[in-house]
Length: 254
Image (cartoon, rainbow, N blue to C red):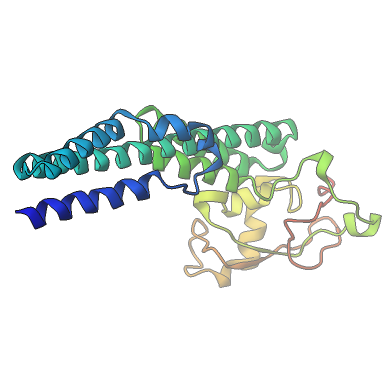
């Protein structure tokens, strides 16, 4: 009995010491550190731990065991509470970042020049808001991150890189297909991009140029990520090399 009570109290002391020790917290939660640690469960854990210590020192081992058990239970509740509050803070921060990224993209007319990416980003952002409304913090965080990832290769006019006139007039002749979930890659959307044809109705040109590369040549609706598509010239434009997300291309002149 004595050994069990002492072990419980000792383990609890280690648990509480570890819990109180400085830890690396997400930046979004730094300001929450004090109120998080001093939550009601932690306060109860400390109270029961003190009761257990007093009971143990006085030889009341039944009370010591019971109190130490309650202390550990509340310490676990405190851990869960802290973990959830940190998730909330991280999700809200990521959603704010995604909202700012969307606003930036809209200001740069991404909806016009990168319609597929912008649409995908909006959908993921809306999913993040929906997840937050039902307290699904992991889903809210991941959807907000996906929204930002969808805009990763979008450039605004103010961020265009300095290139020579000849380089800016040179359009890509190849493109590596990315995922549908994040980038919305399909023949229709790729053809709509300004460095391709700027017109989704030109998708059959891409399809016929790459038909024999498809897993099912008779099904243009499915193109696998990683597939390298050829982009034929249709208006005498100069095309060379693989599409580079870090470059700025002048849109194909209509």
